[in-house]
Length: 104
Image (cartoon, rainbow, N blue to C red):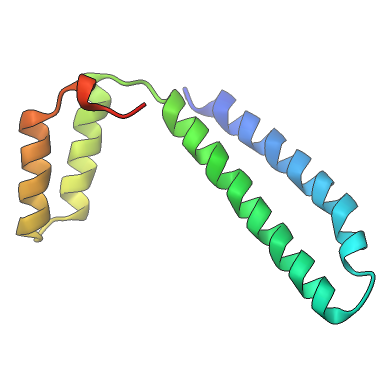
């Protein structure tokens, strides 16, 4: 599958993040409870941020082909089946979209 190298890279990055967190977390538990909670929550937020950045990076690496656009439109139509307002927007996008309109 064409996503295997990307998934492997994401898994490697996840291992690196886990290893980094294992070094940071023991420091988070020194001191009073308020400090522990603050650092623990911040660590969780950082992990979410890293995963979000990896997702964005992965999305930008996806092929930008007409087939990919049609698959995305089909999935959107499937998700919004029965919602005429959203389906109208999807139809409008399908008719008027040009690759030059994309934000990079």
